[in-house]
Image (cartoon, rainbow, N blue to C red; front, side, top):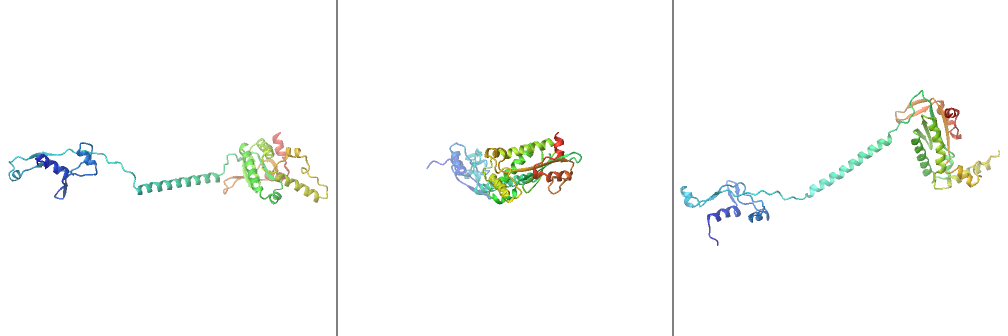
Length: 305
């Protein structure tokens, strides 16, 4: 056993022994290998909970303060070390995951609400609103739509969807205004007669050029005409059913859309329910009355020159 000295005794109390006095714990605190590293001169976390000026007294000094202490009072050097970084606990990790999921769902819900609101709102920028300015109204109608739904019930949903898509693209292109749809018919208002006529002209072109993906619609129209010819005792002649295939393809393809156009003053009203504009009066009546015959009325013709 090594010889006991005052220095060894002080070091022993500091490094190895915890002493309790007046409910205060004095002595080293060992945390794994960190404090062991401190003892060898490396960075560590040695603590003595506030004990300072540690000295070693002899019994003689305790009885007679005039007797020198065996080891002068010293305060061991304390070294501070940053706490070791730790990972997230399981509750913290669960909280972060749940919070992220809930936050993401809230963002999706808000985006969906905004998208629905935007879709439900009407873009009235191109709507004719001035009651003293002439309005050109365009009415469209799919020829024999009721018979087509009966004959081609499986094809008509896609065909009508394409019909709506093509017409709406033209409405946007020529800065016109979709007033409403009635069944498979469109009511369109235009500030400019020229824009309305251009829309109608291109409408017929895009319908002839569109790939409908089937010849059943054209075959149905031929059957409708031939059936009428058989039933009509007045000598009805099918206008398209007996055309040469090349000639037919040049003028007809897929759905046939009839259009009526008329220009004049309208009774313009804003619907508080739909938040859109509607048009009433003789101009509207004339346009819808002749939509089934593909006519351009005199008012529109005069405006076009």
